[in-house]
Image 1 (cartoon, one colour):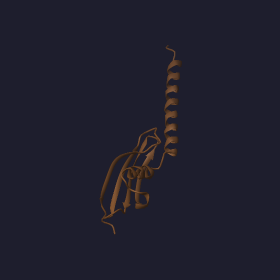
Image 2 (spheres, rainbow, N blue to C red; image 1 turned 90 degrees about the vertical axis):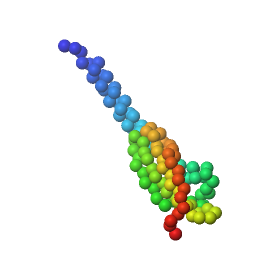
Image 3 (cartoon, one colour; image 1 turned 180 degrees about the vertical axis):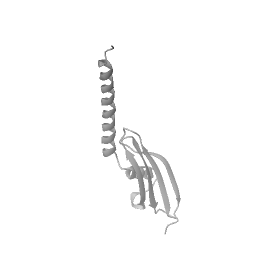
Image 4 (tube, one colour; image 1 turned 45 degrees about the horizontal axis):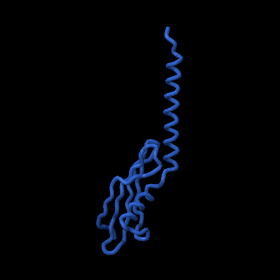
Length: 110
């Protein structure tokens, strides 16, 4: 009969590695930056000042395997009011949100 001890040790090591990755992912999702801060960063890079922006909505799904967010801001600049939509992703095991889409449109809200 073959010795099963090496197989058990291999399985135990694999399970410990998976558990460690889950814990790291969970901790990173807890300490992750806020998606609206990442969205404000891209809007600042596009020339919008913080006082011109108001948060309209935010939808997130976040967890140890990464996350997605959709942030919507109202913007009052020179001329017509706009709605700015920013989609973001947070890769697994990363605390930082990355912009995946940016769109400005004329506001239909008064």
